[in-house]
Image (cartoon, rainbow, N blue to C red):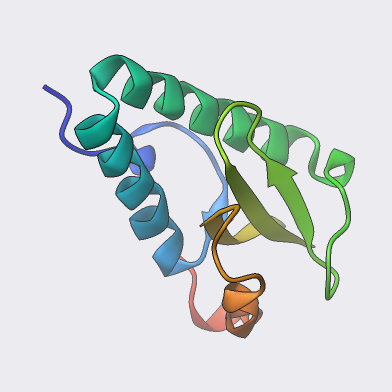
Length: 116
């Protein structure tokens, strides 16, 4: 049985703040515990689709505050918040729609806190 969502095992070049993997995995764990394996797998598929979209079309995502952009997942109440950089998109947060807005703004220093 799948016990965690390891997006590192999926080939992508998306750079992200070190907290993003924890945020995604916590949401995955929630769906796995509370909605079952099938729903958790649907969540995983949608995460992968969102990553592909952000990597492939970063300027196609709506502008947000402080020179950031956001991508709302289609089925699940989550957003990716990211900033376009010369090295490509840098994800600052993966947040539930009901979470305190802007909690991630302190992460706007990508050179100090990203995963390689």
